[in-house]
Figure 1 (cartoon, rainbow, N blue to C red):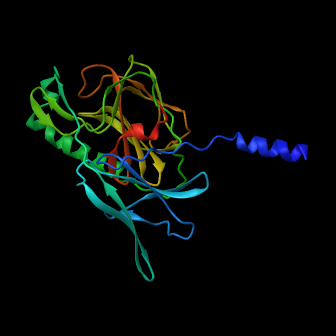
Figure 2 (figure 1 turned 135 degrees about the vertical axis):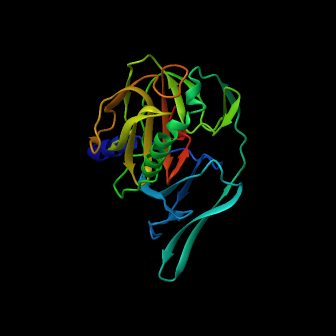
Figure 3 (figure 1 turned 120 degrees about the vertical axis):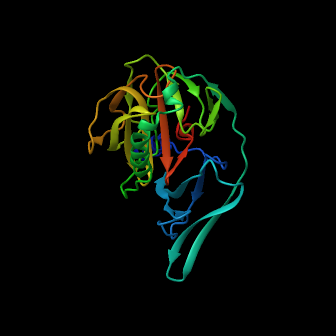
Length: 266
């Protein structure tokens, strides 16, 4: 009896696995609980959806694009008897505007001679962001870097008075050279020195979940390298289009950038 009681007590002390927080707005995440007999190959707007088990329960994690219109949406899976759909509602959200002064004006208005490089890098980024590998994924994320969060996801940005695309990630300010760790295990699928992003690294965490770290002063990994959770992948820097040293962390899910804060517990 005593052994059984101790076993029960020990089981109750096992913490539940962390999971992303649902946010049914553009730039957020839909967390959809599935039945045990539901298919696992759901798609959203034609792209495969991350399906994993959290505390033994199968769940679909769906990235919601910033340009997604409010209203009813669904994920779907093809079955022999037809199409199986799961519906969810998306509300509107208004993001704030951030005005930024960049001293290197070329990073706001590139020269004509820069465009071939910029377009080639854009294609590489899109390929990395849209990658889907059917490998196990750990959605219990670490914070890549301790520091001051200076840039919020989704903010409309105005560089030197000129409107640009909304902010696609989380900015964390820290001293140059501060180590940056991978929030989860994965594989390095892209890296290099890019015009706007500076030194960057893309990590595939599995099932369409992708991290991108930008503006690094140093890259400490190689293409194809398998990365452990908490492993140092690079160091904080001020490369590319920046106003000071910081980490820009973007998190992609089913091919779209979503708010990385939703994968953190703090």
